[in-house]
Length: 204
Image (cartoon, rainbow, N blue to C red; front, side):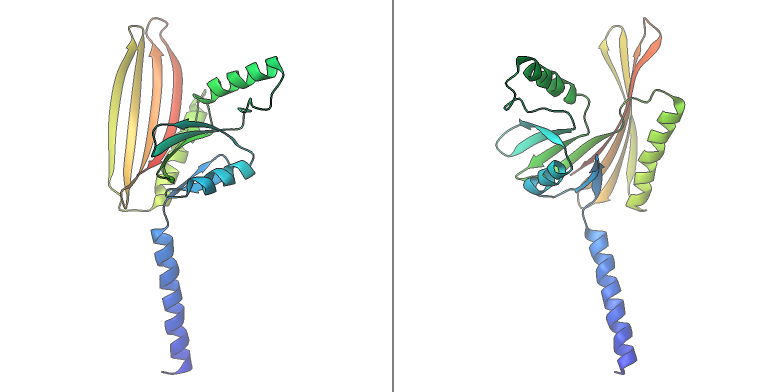
């Protein structure tokens, strides 16, 4: 084989290897300023978030699975001697359970679910449109030929409240999925929308 031919063959082999690695890399989702991928080791994921300035609330579910809330708020009361500061940390922890930068689920030490708000509470049509644009933009980045399903859910938390959800779930291959939930609640008695939340899940 001539030198020029060997160069072409080697270049094509490297290009194919790079393409294959890109295709097989687990999908990821940014939590705040950190991009996490499914399958990451728990210690590695939390270390990257810690280095970026995030705090955690660890919620063990059982011996094999745990949930970690990611937030920028101060949630560690262990070094707080001031009573008022300790109380504020308690308030921060309670708020972070419902309003945070993301929720991670680990099973057997590996990341199996990432949940993050795309837009916690859009207050204008423009903000809602931007949140939906971000949602579909992410699906576009995932590539073509993914099987997707669309569903709706209606709930009645109380006689005066009605909650509705739009669910879009796409299979990414390898038993991994991306789901986007658009949820809003309406107070029938007040005839007003109480809350809109757009959340994306990456899970397996």
